[in-house]
Length: 332
Image 1 (cartoon, rainbow, N blue to C red):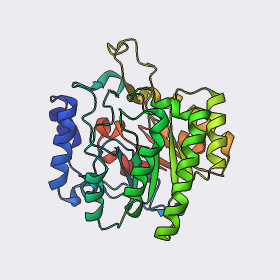
Image 2 (image 1 turned 90 degrees about the horizontal axis):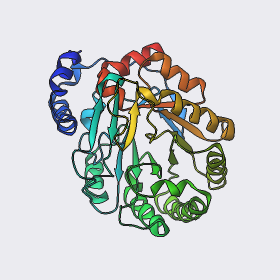
Image 3 (image 1 turned 135 degrees about the horizontal axis):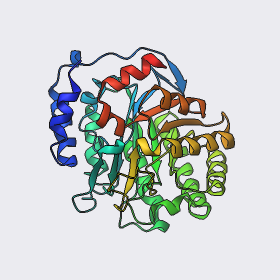
Image 4 (image 1 turned 60 degrees about the vertical axis):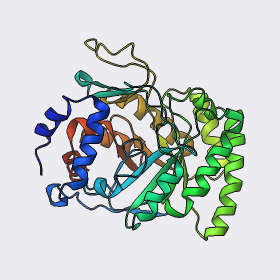
């Protein structure tokens, strides 16, 4: 295993967004033998068989440029995106910030991506030997009333190449997006998407699992409505959770007033409580994927106890390095 502590020292001297692309570029050319192999522990969920429970959350590889490279790390599955119909630059830079004292990140990215056609071109080159989720969203300029058109457009494009598809309706960095979790918008959105899925299922002779990524900042009442609507519309699973607008940071942090979605160690409890409530609402009828603040075996196990069948990492990968994947699979 390569010495990640040394690499982290170098990468943390760069601006976060530059370090992000530097790390992925290095990984692309690194031999796979450098990385420890996770312990197999097959899990059946979403009609798929996962080699173990640990996957990569959306956001690290928005455009599918690094799928092969990221699989070297030993992930059981990789979720790419968020991707939108049209390319968009995202919010102005700087828009990604480390909160080192709390092992956290604050991002204001705003669905920066090269568009769904670019992602599809990359997916076509992937030999489909692993499980790939595709996380889809709406363009910033698309109104909430027209949002379903954007999701259906992306759905139709990626359907032949994805193992599952996630609807991102919970990012805090696209104005008003989280309103799509409210009953009025969610009912209309899922009704339209369900009809599109039925046609695509028939056309491609396969039933693709559809998931929703949920915010940790919603009330129990909103989560109850969301769960009911998801069950009614045949949604296969929920990912709990996205980043938070709250700031459960240490008193030493100078980042409390910085806007954007907070991820990492400080949101562990908040994300796990949301997951636990969702499990109480849906039981075993939906697959639950736990994400948010997983940084060691204890925090991973808390997610499983709260009802998750699968887990996803992102921020802890930045702070702990690739060895965390094999450590978690062996510990669990």
